[in-house]
Image 1 (spheres, rainbow, N blue to C red):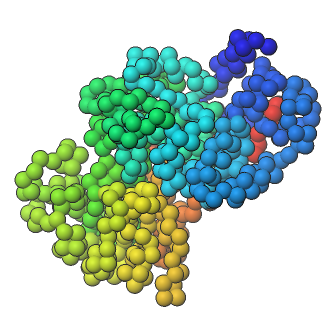
Image 2 (image 1 turned 90 degrees about the vertical axis):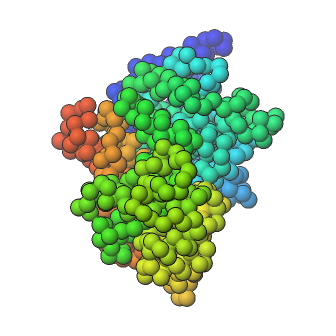
Length: 581
């Protein structure tokens, strides 16, 4: 077969009619279009290749006899083999590379492995290992696994370029410009790794079909001198585009997505703080979208706050929270918590905001410091005569907070004197070092439990190992956005929401909080276990969809059984066969 003929067949495969966005995924409702692609090209297509799962009859009819080892194997057995491969790897980065290789050849197998061993593998495909993978992405690169759009080469043609993506129906898009990957700074196009990892969790945890899921990096240049001097770096070695021009590029991309994939949800990921708020403000009612760093982090930390206040026995109207850090994530969390205090605490919006004490590099943000504040910091600028203080211990002693949240990305910042001051103000303080990856966390779990003498209620942004302290065993909680974003995206997309409202995120946070039993909360367990992620995402999606109908932003008729409607459309690789009937 000529190369031209192969391309013609492949285009016939990927650009034929696909089902409505509210009817995707589940094998009972979709038919993979494999009839036009046979022989070796079928095995070269990771979205269609089923490898050893093909029966002998299917191999014969598809022209792939002799191109695979003769044994037919279950997905479970193939997954066990992959796990053996992973055990032979000495480093987490090596494990990441093995999984990337599987994903580039056989997506069905990859997702079966990821779902089956989610607790073990989520930290590999996402935080904390994805941070290291992004740092080294240009050096470990072996397959694209995503969509690469250049602001220098493709601007004005984004819609055209998106047409090359091998699916006409895309439901979920994760896009970054690599400007602020986790706490690692400007990584340029290496940031595609974070988009890939997020998409993998949307599929494994949220039930999106992999064919309908697209990771994207927008190459807007980089100001990282190491990358620009690196011969392996695969992005444009040009100054990063900023300001209004950058906004215009992101807007063109979003509108191109909406025109090409009308019901898709766009999730913004790891844009620099100054741009993150501007992008969200400009786009949130133009396209179905959200920023996980701002809104997703806000919702998942609000969940921990809700359950933490229950564990303490603190009334919401009395709560005081110190934020160490004032970037996009910190402001997003603060807004979410203040809104929740207003909604459930029976206080005004202004009173709710007074619960927040936000610190940047210059100390508490007040209107008496004498400096010019960035727009996003003005929301929680104190105007009540709060003393200007810079030292964290002094601030903790003065405020006596119920919770200390770290979102600085600065690494170790909460020391013994900080923790002891917290315990002086409250017998069971919440300590949440939320910065990623592990090297950027403000305190370790061991130090938090040890210095608080086992009193602290701890949750972090990255996973920490269990801690034993004076006969007590502590399993540190993790305020992991993956508990929120798959369900938010899935629920909003499946009901064709026109936009994602603040109350939809509040509903997601409340439903996640309700998933944890009262007994576990009293033990200091604020979050559900990751092994239940699919069920958690379903419950969150139902809450989001219910709120969408309540607010009148859903565009479909309300199903009689909303949970069944959503559950039936969650993709499950274990149901996948080569030729659906």
